[in-house]
Every structure is written in structure tokens, then in C-alpha cells.
Image (cartoon, rainbow, N blue to C red):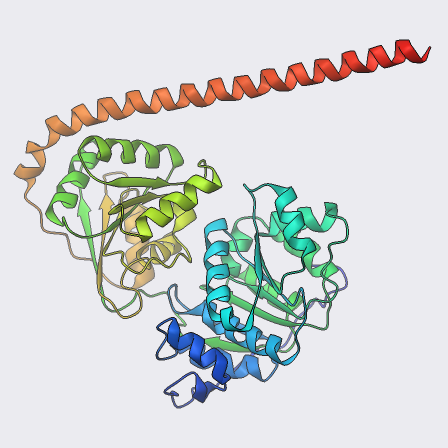
Length: 450
């Protein structure tokens, strides 16, 4: 890890003994003004990870939090940070690193909601947004910065006057995902330029070798707060699979959406292209479907998410960019349209439903090519999934309408691709003209000078 950080074999983090479960945030040691903020957000009772982590963090200890997705991790680190900020007010007080842009915006919303009565200011620093406006926001020195590692390093290296030398708190949320996305180099650079005398919270759904290495390099004598030691899905989640021929996947999807009409759906696809295609297909069949994937601009991604959150759309099609960390309370059904290649991603995908004590369903599509991947998932979660009941004849009755919608979706996809290419060509042409003008201007100047 980072030079100047402690390497080698660190002692195992202390395991926090299971305490008698407190009844309120006040019992955990949270100050009155923040308890009121929790109440206004509808947080009546602390979650398990909050019960474990908050008292330890308030004592000033470093924390490793291991908890399944949707367990209230943001509150577990935001409340201790805000309480410390109340005691010693300071600008550029805390940095939260996250793997995805959407999660960064979500964490910022929670910080601002919890800290609204005490005037907390937070800034989101992520890719896909103009760097100049971000530089201006950083110049105002917010209390909390929520960032993806790549864009933060960009500002540390290029934005004059910006540094994190006074930082008091570092949070790495979804640390396993940050490292899986190859942000190790960026995390190293960040660790080199922030104070060693700081408090560090590392939250992760899984304890991988990379996370252990990061723990040794970044944390001092941490307390481990684990509320789930093995991979598992929440109890109120009903999980099913359907075994189908690959060529009829679209027809089976339409059948399930009709069967479970009235619910809100999150459908996971493996590629940006398939996400876009399937969204167009469903729209052509009259469904209110909206895509969310990495090839969309940041504004469009946030727009999709907000429409789905506001229930203006009932179907969100997403790549794994949306499978972790996003808190969308009203997802009734998760459909794994494309089976995840990494079994652990299954846990995070289905964790989008049955959150905060509600029930939910998940249905995984298994084609003749997916059997081995599906067996790995069953092995990981330690249970055999039942088949979702279906009427094959009804599915086959849909094939003709679906085939027509597929044809239109392919045409629309092609048109979108052509528009994108022509826009890129226009940008390239403008750039080339700009370069030519600069060169011509330079030549004119030279002629004048001599």
C-alpha cells in the first residue's frame, strides 16, 4: 500500500462483543440534535451495524464494518463524523470514498439531511461532471467531501490550493468494490497526502485479501464490527429461478412483468448495450421502463434514478453499476435477466429488494449456458432455489408480439448509435478546425514578429 504507511502483519482487529441491543440512537451515545435529525428521517431504531459501530466510533476508535447491503452503513459512519464535527467545527473535516457516482450522491443526501440543522455542507466530487465547477466547490472548503477515487486524485494533483492536510476522518465505503474496480493506485495516492493522525472507517460487504491489505495499511488498531460473517440474503426475500432456452429470454421477461404487474422492478443486464436494447424493447410493448448504465451521461443517470425513485417509472434496467449501495426503498422484484458472472454480485443485486424489513422477490433467468454459474450462486448462499411457477403456453403466445418489438428496438438502437457517431464526428471536426485556427494564428504571429 502507500509508502510511509505501516505494512506487514498487523494484529487481528478486536471483535466487538455483542452488546444488549439499545432501543434508540440516544442509547448509543448520539447527541440530542442528531437524534432529532434521525427521527425526522424516519430512523426510529438503529440497525445492527449502527448498534455495533456507532459507540466504538464515538470512543475515537478506527472501525472495520462488515455488513450485508442495505444494512444502514451510511448512518453508522455519518453520525459519529457529524457528532465529532459539532464538538470541533472545522472545514475539510471528512472524506468519504465510494466506488460509484450514484452512491456518492446518495451519501451526500444523507449527510445533508442528518446535518441540515447544524449547517453541514458537503460536496460530491465524481467523474462525468465539469471539473471547474467542482474546483469552485472545493475552494469553498465544505465540511465533508464524498468522492470517487479517480476524480479526487485529479483535483489533488491539478486544483491549486486544494489539499487534505487538515483531514480528521477518512471513510472507505464499499471498500471491496473500490478495490475490485482497480482504484488501488488512486487509494495509495490519497493515503500518502492525508494526515496519519486521523480516524478511519472501512466498510465492506466482504472481507477479501485486498481489503485486509488495505486495513493493515490504513487503519490503526481497529475494532471489527461484523453483523454478517457469511454470505447471505435477507430472510424476507423470496428467491426463485427460471430455466429457459436462451432464444426465448425476452418472451419470458415480458410474461413475468405481466404476471407480477403492479410491482416495481429492477432488472439486471450484463452489458450497457443489452440494458439499452431491453429498455427499448419493453417501451415498445407499453411498459414504463428506464435504463441506467455507464455509457449514459451523469445527468441522464441521475434523471433515470430520480424518475424511478419518484415512482414515475415502474421498471429500472441496470448494469451492475447500480447493484451496490443504492437505497431505493420501493423495489418489489429484482430480476437477474443476465446471470451475474461473479457469484457475490448476486447478493448485491438481490439486496436491492426486501430492504429495511420489507419483503421482496428475486427471479434469476438461467439458460442452457448459465447452469454452472447458477450452481455457484446456490453454493455461495447455501440453499437450493425453487423454480418460479409459469405457464409455458402463455409465454409462447407472446413470441410474435415480442419478435416485432425486438425488430423495432434493434432499429432504434442502430439509430441511436448513428446519432452518437455523427455527434462524435462533429466534435472531432470542430476540434480539428480549432487546432487549424490555432496553428494559422501562430503562423500569422510569427510573420508579424519577424
